[in-house]
Image (cartoon, rainbow, N blue to C red; front, side, top):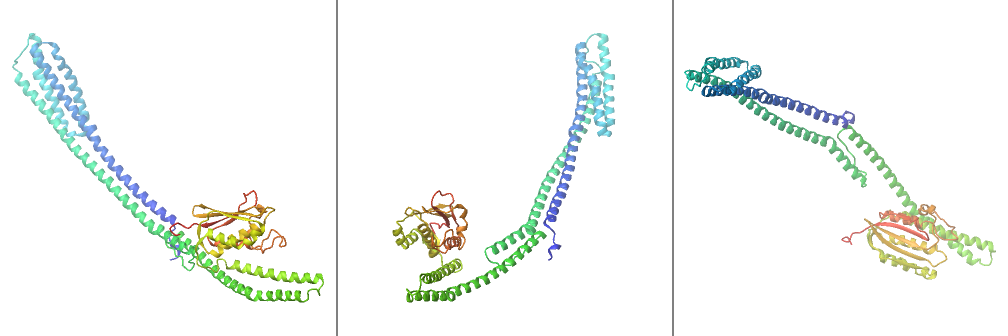
Length: 496
């Protein structure tokens, strides 16, 4: 599929966010409606029905106070006992007004019952309470058993029955409102649970979709890139998913193709280098040997017959041929590092340094040098190449010596996963400005007549150390002499 027909990752992300936004908006709206319904049910129960019921109970309390005041006055003829009656009249009027204000808007059908209640209350007062109060006022004595007692009881019972009936109506409304409130609360709870579950499902679905269309393709692309980075340049890089991932995969594939082409060119170049090395080691050295041999024959045969300048010319020719052979051999050795590999084994650096020091015993004895080696570790590598590193550094320390007898110190220190080796001498030293130049092939700091050599030794050391996974450098902080440091990967104890 053409990457241009695929959705970009930004559009996929916007679609996922938009879906979440829509679902969240619907969930919030549904929850808001449910909470509004719950609030209305609560308002009906607590702010309308409960106050209306309290108002009706206030009427009941007021008429009871009136009846109590009248009965006390009849028994004692004391005007003080009429205070509850008079206060009850005012309370009843206020309670009736509150009842009408609260009940009628909510239950217009109860208007007749409220009117009937007020009529019964007024009839009880007009037919019972007021005549008896007037009779006691006129006689000035109590009436323990008035003739109107039965009538008063009957009227008062009717009034209380009407009040209780109205309270019962409101109690029924309260029970229904409480049931509605419970139903709405249960609906809200289930709505919240359902919306939560829906959000979990949607988020999980979006996560799965994003994983399949974004993360999984990126992981596959990363795996392909890692395989290519390990050196498998023939492994084709394929990428799916959104447009950006496909384009990135195509760019990586194009880069892999270019690297593969460069590797093939490099292999062809290495093949040509091997052919050159073969020619240099055989075809070039044979003429040089002949030149050197015949120049030496000329020198021996015509010794004394040539003037001083002629003998000097022969010496120059012999010396040049020999130096050319050394250069060719060093160049061949340099080209073989990392190209012609042997099995890497565990190398005891203590024993390796002892062998190097033994090989330079004659020079050490002649110069009065001392070589001290601390406790050195065991590393993994090609013993001959590592021996060449120590040999070059010790040889340079013996060659570039000062007025005092050479002193060489070789130590090692563990730094994380690497061993850091230090080779220090008391020689003439190297200026810091040449810290990098000395590791370039054929770069010399001194004339060949002062210090012989081809200028390839330190370049060889760097190539060997980097081939073994380490690095080498000149320690520019040393005050005197020359200090080289190089690292090699550490070998764990179980491997040893």
